[in-house]
Image 1: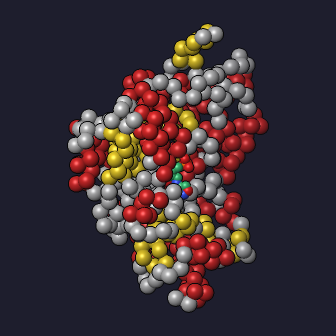
Image 2: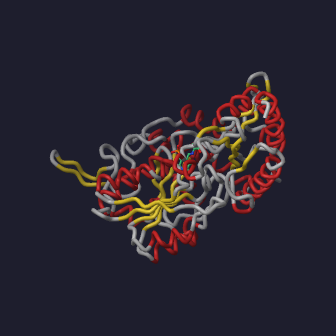
Image 3: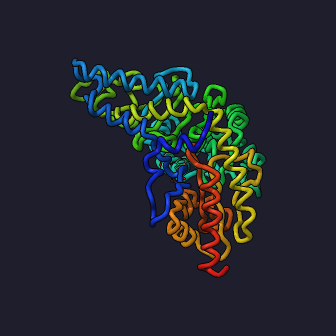
Length: 408
Ligand code: 7TS
């Protein structure tokens, strides 16, 4: 049974205090906390297996190589990817998108080509495309949103008429929480002849994801937002695309043969994993996926449904609060961002912190989105498996202190 109170016992950090108050961690969209199982898995790896992969013909090297392989298969099955070698380990979502923007971009993006993104994207799914477009003389077109913070499908269809080479958008917005219709958007993009990259950084931690069913071409996410360690992330891409793309980083580990004047590349996934991989991180990531699977992603999603609905309902009782994004909890996930009338988001966050409550304030790496809403900064409460309704109640109570201090 899914019991957040029991789950919380697995997260050592949740028993610490901040400013003399019990920690209320509502910043899981930035990074989630890690259960003891993940921390132990990493430590045990270093205590028992630590060795570089592939290179040593010795037991520790073989065990290390095996553990990296186990992690790859774990990720493959978790997101229902057709092939294990399509899972490329990177540091994080940002690196995964840069890999595609650089590698696919240098191979397939030509002068005057178009890449389409949306205004709700995290900077990590916007800036790499701007850079790729600048390098290749291509253009980035940005799809707008509706009043309620959903992708404007009319504008999307219009941008597809430009026959883009690639479309890149988030599965779930890190600021608005909007869940985008990935399968539908992918179908339309494919019809227009475009490839599709989906930024799943805020989706994989909360809902079952099946990349095969979504139909996209690339799907990227970060381990650290889904109970795993920092420094390990995933690029999934269709095999034929990854095989046809030139490498991103070159050097050790990604070659087949090297001559003084040229080299040939290893097969997937090695071609895209130059240098010593983060094996300890991958082992911790395996443990994080085990943890989520034990909870069941269906129940994780149900828990998220409850928290989002509760947060929307409670926040809407505070007259000074203006919630960003759609009010229908069924169409959003993971977080609720809001503006507090007359008080800067950073001031709200500072007062909340004095009550032990951690939220994110600012633009959450979505400056274009905030500008499009005419908002300079917002406060965001975001959730994970260990978040409870009590955490949201604590937020609402602490907002009364904001009212008192600022006399709103
Ligand atoms: N894409 C989305 C949708 C994100 O939410 C984030 C991180 C990234 C990409 C980048 O992930 P990284 O692991 O490469 O850093 N989002 C946030 C956030 O909302 N607050 O801090 C980081």
